[in-house]
Image 1 (tube, one colour):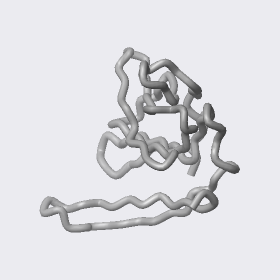
Image 2 (image 1 turned 135 degrees about the horizontal axis):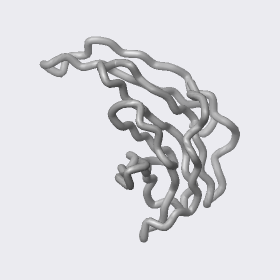
Image 3 (image 1 turned 135 degrees about the vertical axis):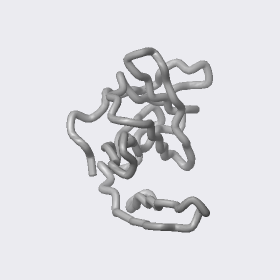
Length: 120
C-alpha cells in the first residue's frame, strides 16, 4: 500500500502442495523512489536448497522499464516487476556487479552495487 510491504515465501512439494510458508514484514526505507530512483528493500541468501539462492527485492521509479542484475562474467538476468516493485533471485551466492533500473534500450537509469550486508 506504499507504506507497508511483506515478503511471502512458500516451499512446494513435488505435487505442488505447500510444504512450508512464511510471511515477513519488509521495512521500507522511505517514500517510493523518484521517477529515476532505485532502491533495495531486502537482499540476502536463502538456504532452502543445498546451493542456496540470492534474492533482491526493491522499488524502481516509473522510468525503469526493466530491472537487470549483472554478474562478473557479463551474464545477466531480468527481475520480475509490477507496481513499482521488483523481485529477482539467482542460484548460489554469486555477488552481482550491480542491479539497476533500465530504459527500453537497456541503458541504466539508476543502478546500485549489492548491499554489503544482507537486508532482512
